[in-house]
Length: 267
Image 1 (cartoon, rainbow, N blue to C red):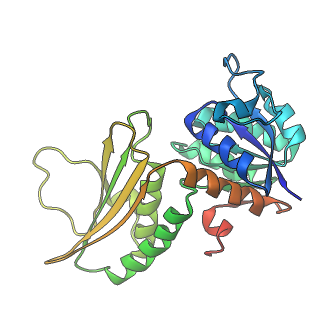
Image 2 (cartoon, rainbow, N blue to C red):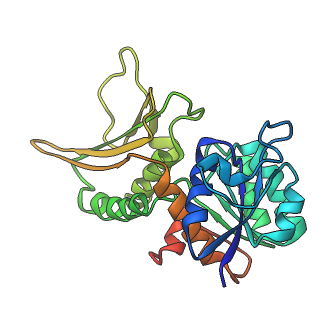
């Protein structure tokens, strides 16, 4: 049986990519498409946004979407995601959350919801990025001494949070491998006379501009050599394809908080 998918933020950049991916995937069926109240796309065929036909009208009623779908895929904003999460709990249905910029309270709410419904929550759902997470764990353990670690990320001018969720997860992976506390060893940008770089520091640098989809590099800088592990996204389609894999993973899954490492069997 196919997975019946609802998509939040259907008219957005990521929403449109999810619509296209779902309509092309024989293992998934587009069951519902949701947009914000007052959107000019309400009532229109969701497929029109990607030049296809779907026979699914865009609605602002997330409860109605859950009534006909197995799960909701959400790459919107934190406040919208938490609103949709409450609806998922009411319906007893699954959620796939790719929203970034979720604060500590929001993450706690997601964790609590996962006690009663299945949730995949990941800062980046691209399969390649999740392979990089595994590579970073290995590299950090090998390069644990004598290498300075910097994380550089670049995104389009419309991205509202920084550093990206993917960059932060990269930092978490490296810090965990090195038995460091990211909250105390991270530095987010530098200015002025900063003094010599502490050996245990993990630095983050952020670039915003144009239509960059997402570039991430983790630099291990030693004496006489540098090791760089890089992922570059040229479109949003890898995120959509990963989200659909997550939707298939959650089919029939018991309540719990999962991420893409679980979806890809990398645990």
